Length: 277
Image (cartoon, rainbow, N blue to C red; front, side):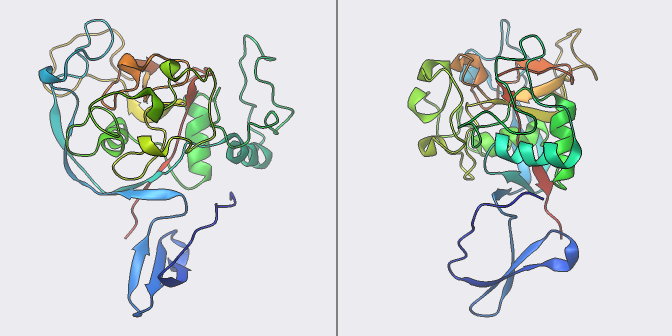
């Protein structure tokens, strides 16, 4: 498994892994055992959540933009989500362990060239890209995790107060890495602390747009008919360094769905995990 970033326990003096289940238990100074999120993951509380956009949110989606309507409610179980996007270094360990094909642009293999399972110099802590849905799914399973659903992803990005971006309802190019930010490439994960989500998740607005587990389907109550609906395309969420902020970077935007074998220099992922009892 991957080497986790150092975790400071502060008031916790003992950390246990319960029975090999992956549940982290921390014992505080009073001797009380409490569950902790796995390293570099955050717990997103479950409950009733609103998904999608309201007419009052203004222009949404691509072109007619009605695939975010109507806003609907669902109940989500608590889950863990990676605090950061999966990096090239993390994916490199996966490649070395599994021999999976390298992430590369098939049309221009020299554009971003890996030397075997080693990423280009200086790119280790940048998010991995040029991975299709099958690659992302396989990595998460290798980590004993899974891809988040689009509803889980949206909740983690916007919280429950209806905000349009992780930090609020006014866009700010200084809080995420999108085309308008002007950096013209990915940044190391976690580079925009001012753009963190309500639950402490980074880069849900930009850097790379992210695969989810969900097929592109109409929302409950929608009368929209699209040939793309069905089990053909997987929903990809969030903005990216190469994409304009509108509409891609809004937390509710679902205008980008692609076949599972799609690869691109702006597409990466992060993993989720069920909260185990």
